[in-house]
Every structure is written in C-alpha cells, then in structure tokens.
Length: 101
Image (cartoon, rainbow, N blue to C red; front, side, top):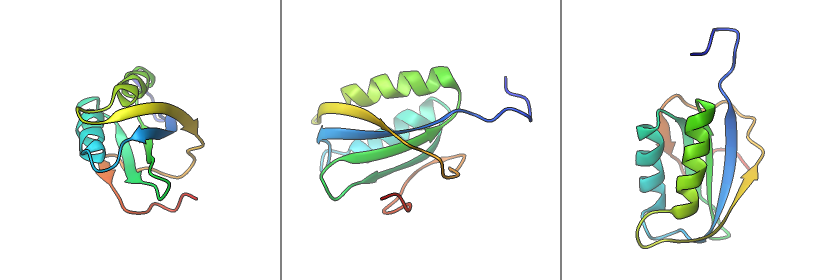
C-alpha cells in the first residue's frame, strides 16, 4: 500500500494496429477499471490508440500485457511506451482530447 509521500506510478502507451472501430477504447476502460487503474484513453489521428494510466506497478504491468492482446476483433501490431507526465483522473475515462501531441 502507498503512503501519502509516495506517488503512484504512471505510464503512457501507444497501441498500433487494427485498434480503431473495434471497441478498443471501451475494452481498455473496462480492463483498466477492473485492475483499479485511473487514466485516459483516446483515438489518435494516425489510427493508433493512446492510453495513459496510473496505479499500482503490478496492475500497470498486467494492463500493458492485456493491451498487447487487445479485445476480440482487434489486431495489435505493437505497444510503445510514451511519456506520461500530466495529472490523470482517478477513474479511467474515454476522452476525445487530453492535450497530448
């Protein structure tokens, strides 16, 4: 359990492949919530999906592994870590834009 002085780990992911139009964001939200993670997910204009999550390190590792598998109907070509430094919500949300370039 974390103390008040500790900050929960935070990580960003860019998921490439057939990940738009297949319910990936809804699946990511359910998966993250089930793992107790906060954060955001959004479609990118290049056809990828970007996820930023915050929570326990073990849950983040499991989430990354699940992102690499994706939901039924998707095809994941790769999951890349990206910088994630902005404050994230405690609940996991689907957003249209959260200010990342």
